[in-house]
Picture (cartoon, rainbow, N blue to C red):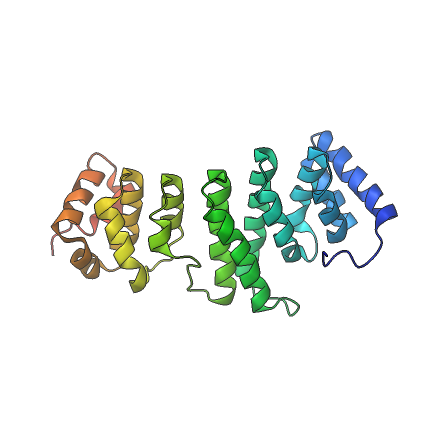
Length: 253
């Protein structure tokens, strides 16, 4: 049972849901969101289960703005897992927004670390499900990282080596983009492996940027001749402004 199902919301729920839906169908997403905030999180969660897509989307637009919005993360994870692309991607966006906000502040007293880790696990499952839309997976991975950082600001939240073995280059690129800077020592080896071996040049270059940008000498020790040779090929013809961090590994001592 949802945490928001303790009361009986039928009368107010119908009015709130109709107001959200009407605004969304008029193309006024801001007003739909405002109506959701007025209705409250319990009504927004009820609207997630509505058969009409416009109602679901109105509720999703409201989710990052209502009170107790973090409590909507399990329901958003369920929506992000649906086969309806037009619902799944906005739901994943909303979840990422909520998670990023949580990571910027101390946890409220009514949210325990165990709650956050449970939510993190839900989105970790989505991120690793290769049958999901890749846009949803990328957003879920970002949500995983943000939720982990609410408890430990230096945590990546997922296994980088595993993420860099994903068959989709968009997921691998997203994983590298989430690596904190300065780059933690424990993440250097998988980044070096990506520079040397990733089949996608974009991913390899992103990994070189993350690996070489902070501490050149440890990066060179991991890259070896194969890695530095690939970086030379990757940066060729690209503006140094774009590849500055990667080129630190090519600078003369």
